[in-house]
Structures are given as structure tokens and as C-alpha cells.
Length: 568
Image (cartoon, rainbow, N blue to C red; front, side):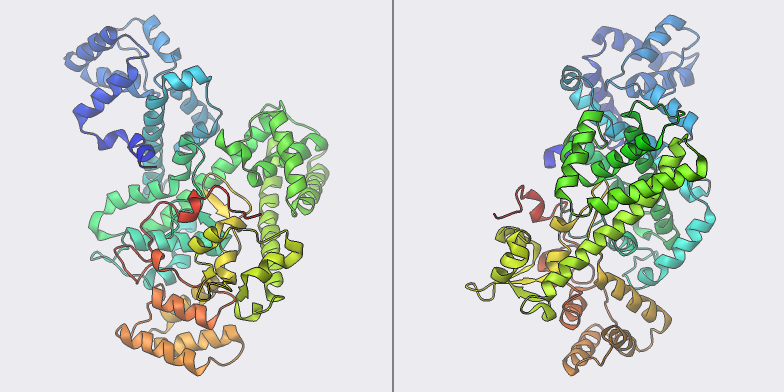
């Protein structure tokens, strides 16, 4: 992972001289060293057209759409450069122009280029190092453009009203987190806030935002770049503000920008499912083909075998194989497939027999929303299974009994995985127990997976904590009374004497404050709501904020390195 990280450092982080040397090294395979040296020397020192020369040099080195002929350069040579597969084997200038024509923003365009199937193996090997660097640099430029447009208020994907509504949503949790000297949030607190937002709103564990580290490692280098988009976007913002911290508006712009990028990439994935059926963007189709398009789109969303090669479905044969596979192994597929057919029939009745890509996009939005419901209902079924076991009411069941539940076909994760997850209680080594919520919120129970997030079980604990945040923001004078009131509403009964005393001691130890995101309060939540709140792990509070905000200070959870989670 460290080697992969070193290989994807953006060019702007190198000194200027080192950057030039790196690019010269990369381009040595593509054009002769002599030709490159002569042109760079001439362009760098020609005094009559410095601006055009600089633009041309940058275009040649980085493959941007600024590739134009200078007055001194024959048009034929410029055309040859334009058509040449610059550095990476991909024609970025044509790609960017195509995105502009379709109204696709730079970030979505850059992410889509990373997900496309790679060139021939020989080309990949020949230009591998340069391809990685160009991809990383291009993505960084695109993300900066996206965030700058959002901050300036002229982003084409969202408007000021969306930012205002997000500020209202984020305000309560923003108030309860530690602030920097400039009254903004530092990186750890900002990442935690953003993680909580997407977790509470969508049950998404967004890669690069999880304070505990990501639960899955990306299968390829380009998927690694795509999966880091949220973390990279946050770094872009943090670099802009420095020690002042991220303001509420900046965090709202981040959420809106990431939502735009994820929805845009979703549409690009649908385009690929459309294209593998030999359909052009402006063509129409019948209901049977549209049904197949949506089945391919959703199967690839759930089924991850192809993602080692591409973020999108590849060919039609592979895509149809995915549909067959997922129909056999995923219990929620019959309901999904039935809903797909209902949506296609609905679109057919509205627009007629000629169904377009826009019909596919509208249907895909509806199907994805249903998928969240299907995934959540399967988690509820799992919870019911837990509750039927001895100790289920307390959120803690015997491992041996869990192994035999539902005929022994489920709950087969290894002891090592459960231990790393914090789900295993080994206080009695001869008779270990499993914490229900720690297990349920683990990565092995996530259904849908994209380059950017995993769709996991809804986290009731965080939703309940959100209610407490709002109550504390509205009446901060007596935090113990506020938390007790919300807790008793959730319990539909009185808080125990031990619970009340434990909360009072926590508040007193923290100078009269409820550190609602800290480790101590997480322990209190687990003891008060054992069926909703997980037992916190010490490893999740290793960052600079200590026990105040979760920050494991790691890219990946230990479970991510376990290729085989099951113990059959």
C-alpha cells in the first residue's frame, strides 16, 4: 500500500525541477529524447511567444486539451501530436472535449476515465508508471476545479439552496465537535462529520472518510484512485484553509460536490451497461432490452468479481454472467428484479414503446433507492435471528449458538475477523460471545459496493445520536437532563440508576460537557442501548484527538487484509 501511495503522489507535490525530470523519464518511451529535448529547450527560451510555448509544452507533457499549434509549428506536426496517445495510452484532450460537449463536469469525466477497461497489456506495461502519475494528476486538477466551482457558487451540479439545506443538516453535529482556532473543524473532526452524514442519510461507508479505516482494499491501482476521491477532496479543502479549519459552508460544499460526483459516476456506469447492449446514447430500445440494461447495471453494483478489472461492467457476455451469478447467490435479487420490471413497464406506459437512456436513468434512480430498502430489510432479518438466540435481548450471544443459527449457513466469519472487528467477547476463552451490533455493522454485511462506498446495515445508534445532537444544540445549559430525556424517549421507559450515574460522571469529568463523539460516551451508549450501539474499540481512538473523536489513524482496518472472511 505504501508503494502504491508513493506511485500516486500528485505532480504538484514534486519540486518543479524534479517534476520535469519525472515527466522526461516517463516520456522517453513515447518520443525520442533528442526530439523532446530540442522542443522543450526551444519552447522554454523562445522570447517571441512565451505564453503559447508554455501552453504547448504543458499540453505535450500532460495531455491536456490545450494542445494547439504555435505559429512557428507546422500544422501537420500539431495534428500528429493531437492524435498520438500521449504518455498514458489515453487521449485526454479528446476525452475532455467529449465531456464538455455532454455537459459532464471535470471530476465525473476524470473518474469515468479511470473506470474504463485498460488498453492492451503491452501498452499497459510500457506506460504503467506514467499512466499512474498522469491519472493521479488529472484527477487532482479535476477535483480542485469541482471544489472551486462549488465554493464560488457557480457549480453546474447544485445551487445555493442545496448548500443552505446541507448547512442546516450539518449544523447540530458541527456544533458538538472540537473546533480549531479559526472556529472551523480540523481534518479528523471534519472527516468524522462527513462520515456520519453519509452513514446516517444513506447507510454508506464512504471510502476515505471512515475514521476506523476502510473495510476493503481496492482491487487495482486505478480503482484505488477512484476509491480515494472523498479523502482527496477533503485534502484539497484542508489545503485551502490551513489552520483555520473547515467552516460549516465548506463542509456543505464538500457534501454537495461528492454527491454530484457519485451521482455522475452512477450515470456513467449506467452508460456502460447501455453500451454493452450495442446501444448508442441517442438510440431508443424496447422494454426487454431496457430490462436487461438495468439488470446488468444492478448486478454489477452488487457483484464485485469484475471490479478488479474495471469500475464498470465490461462486455455483454461477462455482464450477463454476473446477472446469472447474482440471481443464484443474493437473496434480495428476486425482489430487485421484480421491481426493475415494474419500473420498465411504468416507463413504457409513460413514454411509449421507444425507451431512451433518460428512461433508463430515471428507472435506475428508483431501483437504487429500493435496493437500499431491500438491503436494510435483510439486516432487520439478521437482527431478528440474533434476537431469537440466548442473550439476544442483551445484544450478546454465544459464538457456538450463532454458528448453528439458520441451519449453519450464515454467520460463518472467522474468529480472527470477529476479533479484529471488535465483535468477539473472549472474557471466557472456553465460551466466547459475539456483540450483535459490532458484527452487524461490519464490512462482511455490506451488500452494494461501488468504487466510492459500501452500502451496509443501517446504523440505528448513529441515528439516535443525531437526535441527541439536535437536542443538545437546542438546550446546551443542562446536558445531562437533555441526554436523559432523549434516552428515555428511545428506551420508551426510565433510564436505569447506573445509566444516570454513569452519564453524570462522564459530564463532570469533562468539565460539564457531553463529549458525544468520544470513547467514554460510546461506552455509555453501548451499555444503555446494547442492541443498537456497538462496543467501541480502543484502536478507533488512536488519532491526535485522542478519546474525543474517533480516528484510528489508518487507511484500512485490519479486517481488510483478510482475503477469506469465512470459516467453513
